[in-house]
Length: 176
Image (cartoon, rainbow, N blue to C red; front, side, top):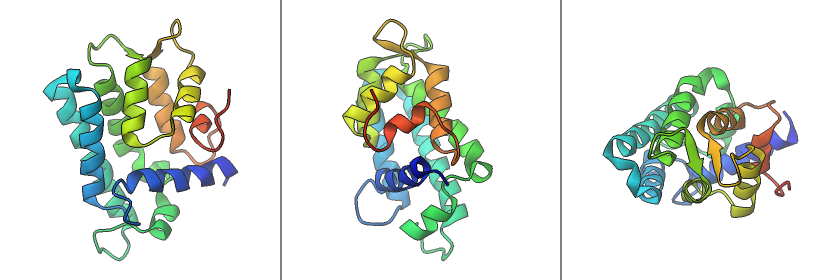
């Protein structure tokens, strides 16, 4: 596995362990969902509900595939073995990417404003310098908007172990 993918696994575990207790649990996904929906209050109830559902779906897929001892928690070792497996997480990831970009595009014009992008990524827990680098790598329209499909693709790429591309801006030192 590429070094960037190994770093993604570490980073994603840290992000998913939203309460910082050393294990990923259903409550972590509820906490992340609340943070993301609070970051974009103007998205409205329908998009917020889709985001909450997507976080719950992702947790369910993670628990089914990674919680090998069925204790309701995913520890770092359980997580490392499965998280970057597109076969296991493809549908949940597609739902998540659609809901996340949907909530970040409250007016539905297919574009996400820089300020909203930064707020959503901060709500998830990504570092601001890396988030800025990713936004710029997504080839913004003008300088203040990115296209929803480009961001959705970067989200899916982030969870693909051998993918190289713009999602690598989220790990390690920011590029650019």
